[in-house]
Amino acid sequence: MIGFPAAAFATNCFVLAPAEGERALIIDPGIGVVDRLRTVLSEHRLKPAAVLLTHGHLDHVYSVTPVCTGSADEAMPAYIHTDDEYRLKNPLELVDPELMAMLQMQFGKLATWKEPEEVRTITDGQSLQLAGIDLSVLHAPGHTEGSVMFRVEDLPSQVGPDSGLTRTLFAGDVLFAGGIGRTDLPGGSDAAMRASLRDVVLSEQDDSLVLPGHGPATTIGRERVTNPYLVGL
Image 1: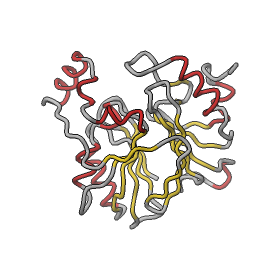
Image 2: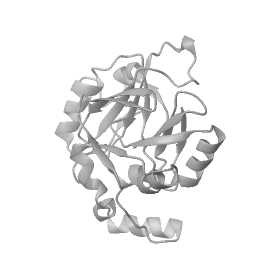
Image 3: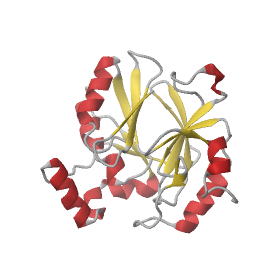
Image 4: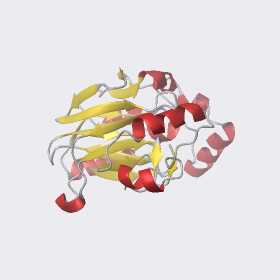
């Protein structure tokens, strides 16, 4: 597993593969990741097979179409929860104009959008077998209607056997180290987030490695006792 931050908002983009030279999955290709992603794939001789999206916010999906069409012999599918599928029609329309102006100033060009050629919707509890990797879909609305976490019953090779960890959660903007995703954006819900934290996040095992959509890695066990949004739930 390889992770690196995008050029804007420090959105974490992850690349998963069983081994070098194999097919790979890409999670949350955000703003300005295309060149870095191409380098990572080339260095490790990986062939991308699919893109997985934890939710439909622009900072997590901005590069999904160029990644799906530019890194493989044929267009790759993009997977997103059915409740966030509408966001891929044109996420630029859902962004505050002041934010768009800031991005244009930073990158020197007006953002454009084209919907991915093949979008596949996913639902809560669904099992995916992609590129030799088994994943479970955990619907956890609150940040957006269709926010999900992806659970993998394995650990990145960088995590040693003495870590005490057994599985990995790609948490998107549901859970951060010491925090949670915002609920005040369109489609967000404080009540839905509280329910997701109580019923989905806290039901996960303490020995789960958490790789969030922003910021450093953490664990369910650590967040259960230190995260102010989880303590008391």
